Length: 278
Image 1 (cartoon, helix red, strand yellow):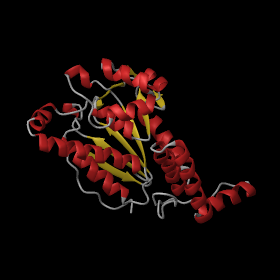
Image 2 (tube, rainbow, N blue to C red):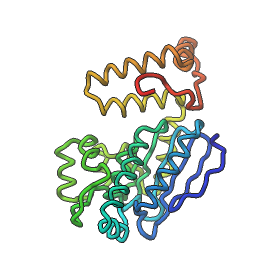
Image 3 (cartoon, one colour):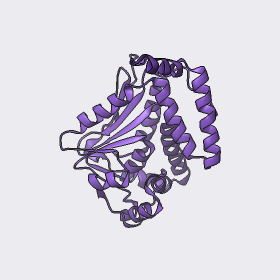
Image 4 (cartoon, rainbow, N blue to C red):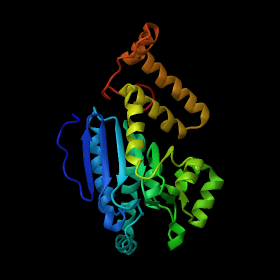
């Protein structure tokens, strides 16, 4: 299914090559704002990619000089004057980011330039992020009298700890790529001009593994984080038991280990791993 034709999406460029998909935010003249049209396009694009069992990793990046500088000024002025419409926008944004977290695909944010406000909230919903050396990342809402409304106040403390998150939110300070790495906002910093190569290497290291095992590992981490520890440990047992006893990749991996050869693992996501939540 990865070879099927994708529709066009407003403000995005979406492409699929084998097991990898790329989503590019395509309004560089506005620093790739996450306005309502773009949020809806991202929802539609991620939904279309979710149906492609061959696609295992999705890379999100911005075009031009920014990953995303956040919201669109005129769009927010219009939404603030229409409270009911603003509530629907916020729900669409929430559904987009929660959908990324629940996706069977691994999402990677490739961050070059500015990543602020809604851009940071999109990064936080991704599973991994790589930053270019010149990246600048932060919340920034209070710099213009705003509050984070797409999960930033909740995901950021969970990602880097409450004290660090408060400091970034309360001051509006942007951090450089090296500090983002130390904080745990990104997993690697690429030298100037080397972001593509760093992302390609990360994607290749994940695609070397079986599709259903990779998706199961994401479920273990992401769903477990939303549970109390005791419940999460039981969830882990349930999912691992279902995978080990019902998915041929688990037995193939053990056989390959015993035979001292590379395992021949799945390259599609269907059927999903078992366990709580389907």
